[in-house]
Image (cartoon, each protein chain N blue to C red):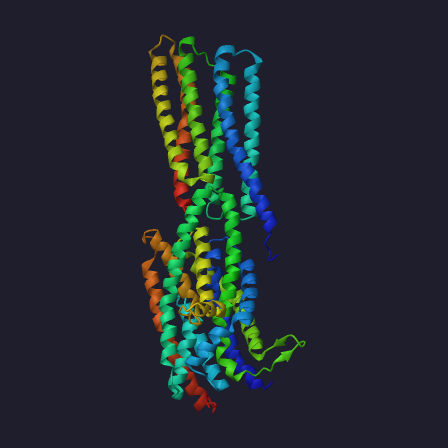
Length: 220
Length: 350
């Protein structure tokens, strides 16, 4: 009636809610897979489990891309959340980039096969865990942006905390690598990987800062 | 029907068009301005409910306006309406949200002054009093609603998309209520002066239903308002929705509902009778300004947010417009009456 599709409005809304939740789930799951991928690579780099996990990350990345497009389409088609639409889409795009960074790291491990000596394994695993925790905190920040605006600040603070932890771990590991007796080319190669993993945290922190600004804009 | 009657009625229809372009824009201005409701949807709902409000509940305020000055000749009513319409148009051109209410009151006083008829000072004071009360009440209602809604949303932790869907629905319902209240409260501005000299006769459709001459006038006025909504209100809606204060869609809803409640309060015979029945002072049934109600509600929300975001210079200009409009309308009214009487040899009063 009157050009208003009320049923369609509410069903589109519910569908979109599910899609956005699903998107955040994917980011969280990709992180958890990545957390397992690094130790799997370090311990059994030759076996098929690692490749299986990389394939899984690839599938999830494609799924996330599809959701981003669908959400973008519906938001514009149905002119939903006009005041926050561009913020939501930018947020999804930046989170998609984060998933892309996880995937990129997996590919780099798979293609370049860096040779991490055993003495660095534990530090690399811990760095990876901190990075994944940081992204998990980001997922909570994003979920609270959509549902519980009051918690955005608290969850955003956790992201900053993990980002700082990650910086400390990255510096310590990089220092240890360059203090070691390894040839310079290998040192450079390992530093490249450590740095790339740490960058995920930097991106997560940037997104968390963005979300906090969006939350201020969203206040009633 | 005499062709001259139709010409004179055109004055009222012109004012109706002004009301549709200006005051009706206030109802859905914030909703359309925040892009929560499409203009076409707003225009259709607004038109239907303005007409319903005018026909069903428009009688109360018409009576009050009639007491201010009973224009007793069609050319006089024509001059008053044209004067009000022109003054509203001039103010709209100046970018100030004014109301036909202020204009028609000014025009009637102009007729009183020109014809030497007495202005009922008691009624005038009541009307002017409500003009002060109207934005204040709207502001207070908006503040109360805003606080409640904000806490409710934070407590319920609604998803941004679900909140969006609820807000859209609420905006449409509040807008329909607002349009109904506007029709009920403001139809007096458009057709009130023609009621004592209505050219229509009652139509009996069956033994149960009589379509009175007053209702026919109100239907005509309502249609003129609808034309105003469709042809000229879009720009005003975006001005109302964006200029004074940058608003969230929820705040837009609160402005619409507060404005609607105020208009309804000053038009509802039922509420007035109820208050009287429990020995409380009744609310005067006075055509109030929808612009004042909207501006009052917007400023109320702005104050609750600390007042920094309100464009006070614009608010000041709007307030000056409210003082200036009735004076301009009175002067134009007197000028037109002079022309009609001395150049066209028409009798502007009996």
